[in-house]
Picture 1 (cartoon, each protein chain N blue to C red):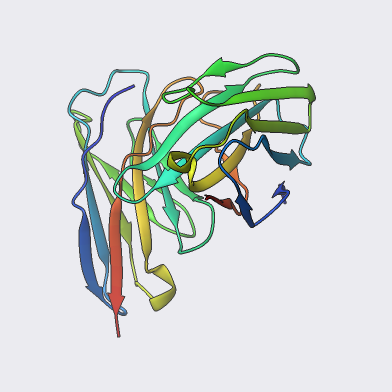
Picture 2: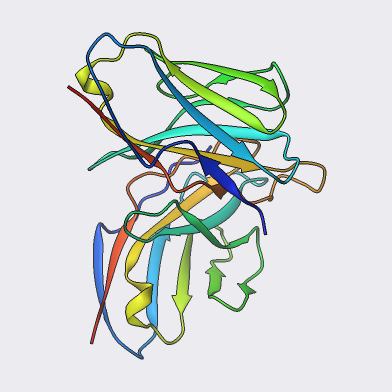
Length: 115
Length: 108
């Protein structure tokens, strides 16, 4: 079974802090994704990566950056956390090579609170 | 990617079939229809997908209309554990737009 793990289930940070959210997948997937989920807004794509050191902006990249130095790891960085970044953050991975219909596998999520 | 619209909430009696509709009237010819569900406090979980033909797996059936402008996810015998938010997504390429989904409550 594919496993996507996220470094923390719950995280509390102060405004202005630099925050790292880590995601690791064990299926050698090329594609990895970061979403945030807020009540009434569903899941929104922040960034995705289709290969090591490659990244693409999603719908809401402002205030975030990402890093993909190794295939299995995709990090989301909040350079200077703000209260409006309080949210549930979900990481996902997806393979390629067998068509566009490959499913995304999600991690359990990190609930970040910025105070 | 095509936008999808779903009712915000539905109820279903335990043991009965749950039929969840999705409208994707702007879907293009190469966009797949995916369904995911999210149980409280967990990440979304893949259910099923299709392009033109109806599909069935151990979890559900997917009925896509001939013009592909809408689809229905069918859970044949809903259980309490099927209570979740269900997302219908039209996909091509790498970006999945989840929207807000349908919150299904299975009632004992």
